[in-house]
Image 1 (tube, rainbow, N blue to C red):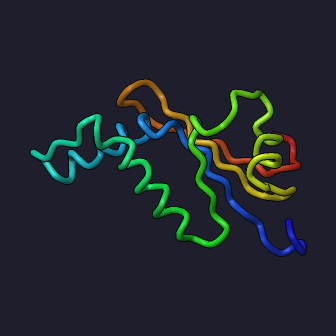
Image 2 (cartoon, rainbow, N blue to C red):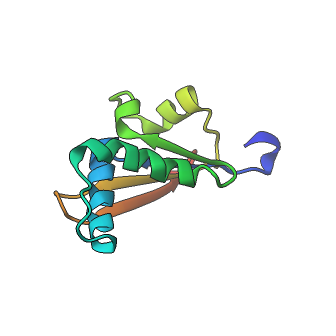
Length: 111
């Protein structure tokens, strides 16, 4: 943490197509009859991410943008500037049309 005062939050989301598909399913319940086809999924996911990063010290990362390494903490430090004490929220997509789950942890703490 720079100066010990600011804590950032890193949201590690599923890939854009998976997140967009889930969001499209939700939108169908709000806007019956509109088509939220596969071609719109990536844009939908980007729109969600863009809305989230309007909050201070919030970063949104999509799985397909991260290297396939086991040490997510090191990836966030090396590639995205995460620092000790930053909060990490990993969102996992369940089976198609299933629930998503979240895992919360702090960088530098036991995960």
